[in-house]
Length: 397
Ligand code: GDP
Ligand code: CO
Image 1 (cartoon, rainbow, N blue to C red):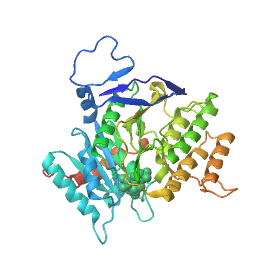
Image 2: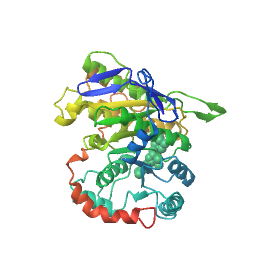
Image 3: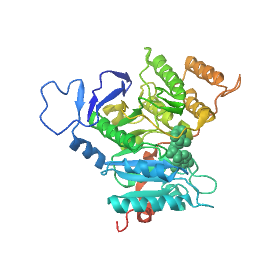
Image 4: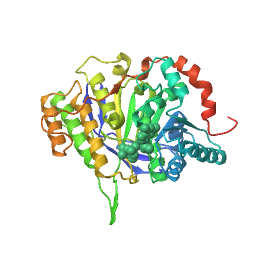
């Protein structure tokens, strides 16, 4: 594929945030010698190079009671070399939707001869493995992993570590377009290819997120993203002293990280997880507070924002849901150790305007789980390793 090279990079301590890079060509043809200046402004990334990264990548699909056709469509878009890990929190009572997901996945893997794992978030073995390894932070009073997409993602990070993968990418299950899913993974691989640091994060930005009403309207920005980005950029601008609008992907659900980086970050519950990842990077490596990890600081943390060609077609949950997303995201910014008076005021003004808080109120403190890096992965594997066989969707493997 061909992607714009990183033309502008904003530096914040040890963090390098690259300006949005557009996909120019989904397929750039056969591998061949490049002409002298071909790879200056534009990166041609050969199929083989992309596959090398896909092989080391696990793609995590968090799902909760999504339509099976959607889930299957998403799976079908994931390049063959990636390992698929579906983390499901679908209901098992009344109608056993998890069982239906299992059947769908088994059939799919049987005919495509590929490996996929399906783990239920409320699987008691998973909770036991986490607790045994010393990570109780996402476990509820009932002894099982808490509800929430973020909690599923954290569990997936541990499983990916156990499977000795190098990269982890997330793709929501409520995506109508397998072609877009395919492109996300290509962008993840392209980002890791371009990164000069083993501590890398790739965030997807959609060119269009169409709305279906009368006809289709190809809207460029979501309202929530716009507001969250503005506040996130304010936080960086005031700390560096230079105004910037570099961050355009505060809410990117579609994103990937090297596991090295994933192990260092702290994760917020529910819809705050994506902005919190950035906050965590800025707090730990922005240079305002002491560096959280010397090795990572030496390499630098590299963030890519890649704009896809495919529009993002996904379940529309209405405007009430938008408010649900805005508040927790802005709360992570508001309660960050980096957030000063001016940005706090900006956050409050936005929340008031959207009726997400009342005058005089503050956004609630986000619930944050600490970095996974300190977990004893051997202990986790001891409990979860054997169990994964029963989560495999490909029989005889
Ligand atoms: P949005 O796309 O950010 O508006 O949020 P969604 O409600 O669509 O959720 C994003 C993805 O996470 C979807 O694929 C959901 O099915 C999935 N999801 C939602 N809640 C949970 C949960 O508790 N556990 C897991 N594993 N996935 C969830
Ligand atoms: Co969604």
